[in-house]
Structure formats: structure tokens, C-alpha cells
Length: 187
Image (cartoon, rainbow, N blue to C red; front, side):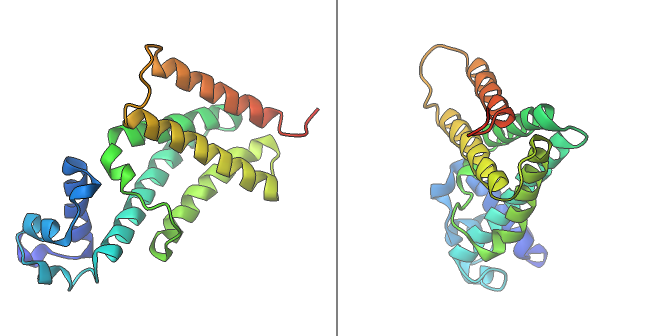
């Protein structure tokens, strides 16, 4: 990368490629600078430190995930939307396992906007179930935990039994949509 082309976005691009290829443990400012063809101090014109770079990366990853999920649920509602959402989340994690594992899970101001967009998509997908206010937030948390947990375990090859993972995931999706149709305390 030419020095003149360096910007905060370009630094994030380089960092994401590094993480995709070598995993999140390889992320250092020195490694990013080396890949960008600059000295490490040159990065400080574009990112304050490694923590800011990680936050910028998390915002980008969250944006990518929200974009992918938003496209998947567009024009769908209720069970069909939840199935599409859950499939898109899993597909993103499996296609970008290292990148996804670099996604910061702690609240971070730089990631808030992208996170709000993703939560908005989840909440919109849940509207068809009549969930509002706190019920919708609880359902969103459960949905995120289920998708995140399964996809991360799958990406890390944590499921070792011979049963097909696609069948397991289809059961999980079925359990989620069934639960959404009959929420806790429902008759």
C-alpha cells in the first residue's frame, strides 16, 4: 500500500486482512504497519493506538454483519425473517471466523452506531411476534446469544459428534421460532 493511500479506513482494511489470514492474536500495530509498508509511528496519524484500531475494526465488522443480516431479512417477516437472520449470522461467522472473533463484545462508543443498527434489525424481525419493550429486548438478547454461541462453537470445531451440523442448526432455528410464537408465560 502506498504511503499516500494511508487513512484510518485503509489501516482498518490492512488490519482486517491481517486478522483474516493470521487470527486476532497476530494484530499488533507493528504488524499492521509492516503490511502497510510504513513505519509504526506513521499509523499514529490515522489511529491513536491499538485499542482505537480494535474499536474501528469492531465497528466495521458490526456494519458488515448488520448489512448481511439486513439484506437477508429484507421483505421477510416472522418465522421466515428469523430463519434468514439466523442463517445469515451463522454464514457470516463461518466465512469470517477470525474477523468475527476480533469483534469486541464490550460496549464501545465507536461501535455503538453499528450495534444500534444491528439491534434495530433484530427488533424489527421480532415485531411480527407482538413483542414490545422489555419483552423485545429479552428476545433480542436470547436470539443474539443463541446465534453467537452456536456459530462460534462451530467455527472453533467444538462440535465433534458425527451428527450433521446443518441438521442441528435447523433444530435450533425451529426451537427459536417455536419459542417466539409461544413466549414465556404464554398459554
